[in-house]
Length: 387
Image (cartoon, rainbow, N blue to C red; front, side, top):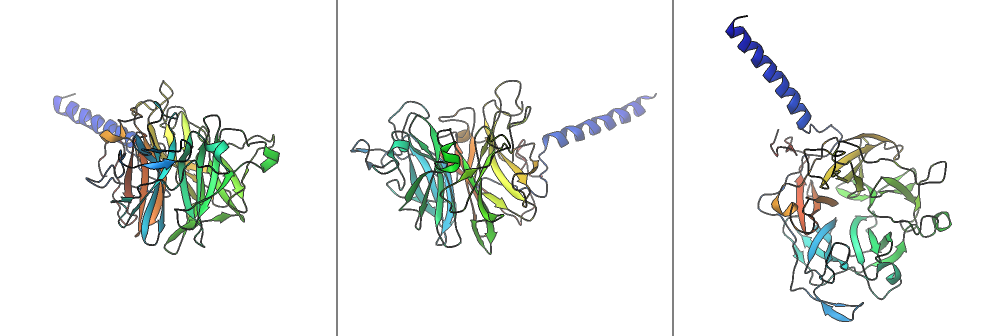
């Protein structure tokens, strides 16, 4: 074999294996998925701690700096032509994650990128009917959506530093809230009342140009859970019944996958969306620290994924992304309370014909990424290049 032929054969195999490697590394989004989301240049983080903001705390009966330590894990919705973000804030009352008190701050924007904040929280552990579930840890990790008649529903974690419970509250203005308590308190005679429950993603859909809470098979529907993906239904948005299997245990819809970015946890994210292709659940995948994870991402890092469920049977998982559509890349997404890296998605709103996705950055800041459905280019989450 002459030298020129050997060079041609060698080049052929180099190109061949390079194409295989590229196909494995690139995240080619299927036609049902949302993407790509891009971080607006020079904007993030959009919300950071404010050491000057003060608030008369009902628990301590003293004035505290309620958002001095961290601001993260936001919910998002639209009201009166503005995006409103309800973000989790922590004071300096403790030394580690989970030991401080959390309250929800309020920020609004006319463009989804630049925000004006209220100086006091709008949702917090108060001297009210929920104090046994919310004192002293507070109110964490909200997800918010709105009904067609303009009632806002927030699902959040009530944290008394004993058992985290999903709670629900409603409002007409996103400022004044009626708390209704733990969502699983009455179902099955309280069977699931005292289990740890977090991260509820309520089903929504676009009607006209508005994202509203939807029903499936005549009932409201949520995906929820941290370790696995579970589900629950409701007729009134307040009292929820978890779906169970034939043994009466929680019905598992999806679980972590060995070797993938979601190898440790699959934690539900922003409100799910009913589309023509099916129901899309946005979720947070935690990568396993050891050999069980995806080696392309840091162990214990949180990246964002999507699952597709059957729109006629929302418990039937049909597909999911093998590579995250958003991962920690910026310095503020990899430094702070959570140094392994976090883009923790909780809020997404349809606004001026684009999707605005709001996420927690390393449990310390709030960031935004935007998806324009009319734009075909999608950034690759591994290389950050636009295909």
